[in-house]
Image (tube, rainbow, N blue to C red; front, side):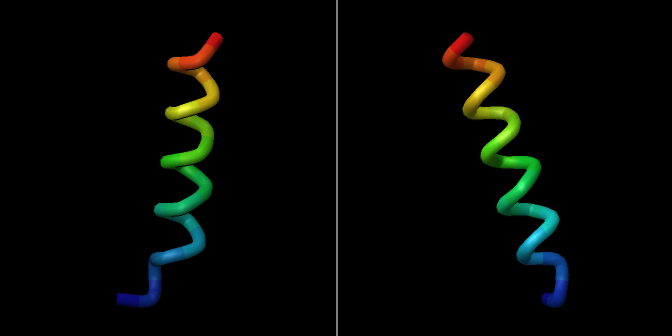
Length: 20
């Protein structure tokens, strides 16, 4: 479980794209 930063970044990008 060392892929937390990447997961968070992907999640943020996904949320941002959905908002647009």
